[in-house]
Amino acid sequence: MSQEPEASASDVTVPDALAPKDQSRARIDVSAVAAMAPQRVETSTVFECADVDVYYTDFRALRDVTLDVNSHEVTALIGPSGCGKTTFLRCFNRMNDLIEGARVEGTINYHGVDLYQDEVDPVEVRRRVGMVFQKPNPFPKSIYDNVAYGPRLAGVKRSEIDDVVEGSLTRAALWDEVKDRLKMSAYGLSGGQQQRLCIARAIAVQPDVVLMDEPCSALDPIATGRIEELIAELKTDYTIIIVTHNMQQAARISDMTAFFSVQANEMGQRTGELVEYAPTSLIFTNPDDPRTEAYITGRVG
Amino acid sequence: MSLTQDRPELTAADLQTSRSRRARSHTVRWLFMGAAAVTVLVSALIIWTVASEAWTYISQVELDKLTDIGWFPRRGLFDLSTLLVNTLQISVIAMLVAVPSGFGAAIYLSEYAHPRVRKVMKPTLELLASVPSVVLGVFAISFITPSILTNFFDDINYFNKLAAGIAVGLLVIPLIASIAEDSLRAVPLALREASAGLGARKVTTSIRVVLPAALSGLMAATIVGFSRAIGETMVVTIASGGGDTSLFNLSILESGGTLTSAMAALGLGTDQVAGNNLAFQSLYFLGALLFAITLVLNMLGDVIVRRLRNRY
Ligand SMILES: Nc1ncnc2c1ncn2[C@@H]1O[C@H](COP(=O)(O)OP(=O)(O)OP(=O)(O)O)[C@@H](O)[C@H]1O
Ligand SMILES: [Mg+2]
Image (cartoon, rainbow over all chains, first blue to last red; front, side, top):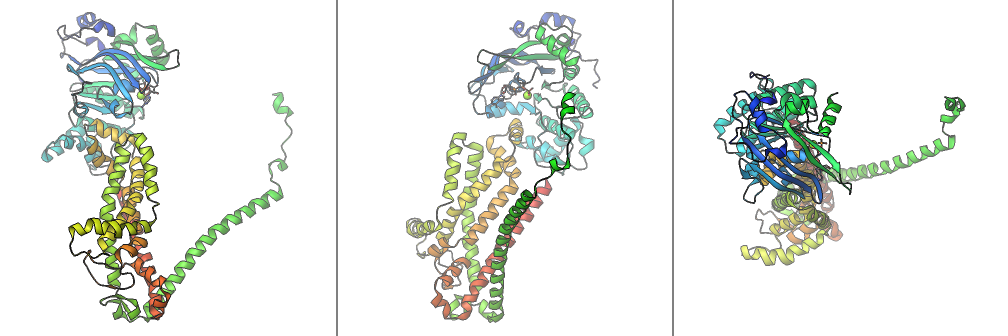
């Protein structure tokens, strides 16, 4: 694991000057948390989400999500299946644009810039906000070409790509396993290796944020453990937002946790909503909302 | 508990089929096998006839007649290179027309078109594949040559290989587009998302991820298209002329017969064929040659596809 003292959620610091104005809606008591915090790297806000609604054509999948994501922290999104975690995660890099009929309302500010204004180019957003998907999805190319794909797009010089590839694979704890077969197909790797390759591929473009959608759901406990270590490691350089179904995993790796739930309306439409957003240690020890408690205890039990 | 106790004891007869049912299923089996055997038999018969007649031809013809000034079967001049070169030229022109536009259409349909547009366009495309080739042949001599090509080439022959190649290309576009589109659509969405997630634009994703991932399908589309172009008869017979007699000529602006149009011309005029006994046999020889070329092409395609697949 990482060298630093247990990075528990209690040391979240949101300096008053940078503290988002509307923190109350996200149910974080900023001053209380800040008071407990030891001296640490300053955290600032990367994303500010206000009243985010997501529609698939006429179906409202998610409503009124308001929360802030801090930089250099791991933010976990948890909740029952179908509550809109993936949907919400894909808002941060405008991946929902790829889905016919998907529509995002409300505002998501990224470093103060409204992500969904007309002038924003989703391609530029995605160069800064990378993504690791639930199922490992390497390209049918060599291991090397998989990692080099992003840097080549970004125009990194040929002479530097070797270094970028090695650095990213090392970072993703995969270098030693693949350094002798970089030119071989990525499909020859195991599932866990493929997922680490996808992580290496995502960090090769040196993004600001890495989004992870249940990155361990297809993996065995050993591979999962490696990826969790990796996430803790990556936190020093990147902001990470991760969807997970595994409560222990959320508790182990995240600083902040957002719990989503889903409720059917009169017409039987199941719209997801944010129930509670708080430092992970609080969510797991002293949740505010009975629904959170029911969910967490039901799963952890 | 009581339920199981009440159940009557199982006897062997319960699980056995009746004799008549078994007999019936045997009959059905033989019927299907017969149908399969007929197709195999017919194919074997065709190959046998073609091969044996081709052998008669090759063993009787004076070999220096096979490399002469052109294809004049009634005069006993059977220069095969004339027909082969013409066939190749026309097929290559056809592929130059059909591959870019077929792939382009496939990429548009699979990557860009709105689902509603695709729903209309795909069947339309497949409908286009069923345009009778004679129509395209007439189109070549009534439009492609007089209205387009004459503007660019002053001394173009009214019947020429270029127009024939273009028309064959038009004929093959839907075939290539349809196979290519299927193979592009088979590329998992997850790969497109991975590419988009790394900051690739749609064009980049299409070219760098989707096309390579669909390579074996695209190869297949090209080979099927090429085989179809080589085998196309009617368009070439009408548009390029020279089926009955043709002088060796490398210019695509001139007329020239192909393997297929030479066969058609020979097969049509029995009285012409009667003038020289070997002319009739040469027809079979051409057939065997055509068959061999398509076979080799298909096997080559198979090897390429397999090699590409093994690489990744
Ligand atoms: N492309 C889509 N088109 C239409 N509806 C969708 C689409 N993707 C998701 N939905 C709907 O949106 C809702 C939220 O889905 P989402 O995938 O975000 O849930 P999730 O919380 O990630 O669930 P899981 O834990 O099972 O992955 C679901 O009701 C789902 O059916
Ligand atoms: Mg999901």
